[in-house]
Amino acid sequence: MPVSELLRLGNARPIARWGTSVLHTPARPVTDFGSELQELLADMFATNTAADGAGLAAQQVGIGPRRIHL
Image 1 (cartoon, rainbow, N blue to C red):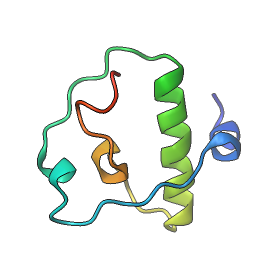
Image 2 (cartoon, rainbow, N blue to C red):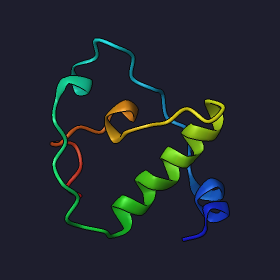
Image 3 (tube, rainbow, N blue to C red):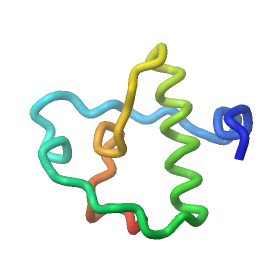
Image 4 (cartoon, rainbow, N blue to C red):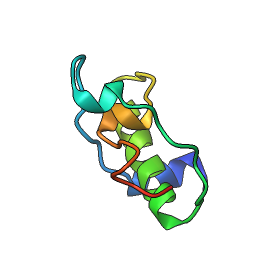
């Protein structure tokens, strides 16, 4: 999916701050590249844009290894 489409579809999410438990939990490898991952990517692109280009990991938008089955 083109970046322009990701930006159009995504919603900015709150960024987790230092000390939030999700930031201290190791992530699982991505094994499912379906629509749920596309939605997460769109939201991460929108969050990145809203944060003036801050680099992000899934945990920083609140997605821990048990909340989403990627």
